[in-house]
Image (cartoon, rainbow, N blue to C red):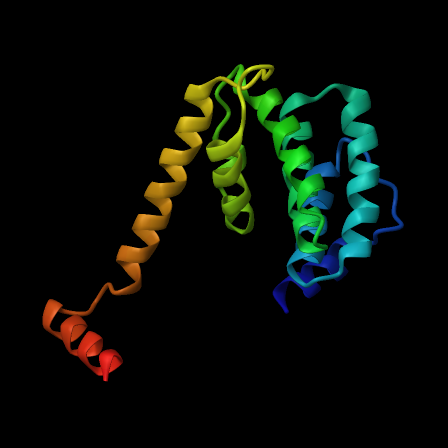
Length: 168
């Protein structure tokens, strides 16, 4: 609801002109559409963003677009394309170890990232093994932290009681 209000206040539309001045806002707008399942509108925005960001040769923004495209492709069931976009983004990010572009706010693609780490052949790759390993470690830590905090506030005894109830 708050997002809808903000969209109206900013007068955002997938048909509007996107420039380098408002591209960050539109990146958030594309992710909003992905979150609510409106993939056509997200794709429309991503296409425009990709063109202006690629033309401007802004690598960090291009990484974000590639990662968001991966989320889009995963959402529509095109996992191979999602993986390709992640590999492109990883190649762009690896030289400067820009790992957080893959971690923050990207939980829906953690499974794809871990699959890439597990299966990716480094023979002809521009992605160093240490970069992939760093992504894996951070995702595992975030997942462990999330798991540990799902039972936060419960005592060990309460947790054991819940386990016993679940077993019955």
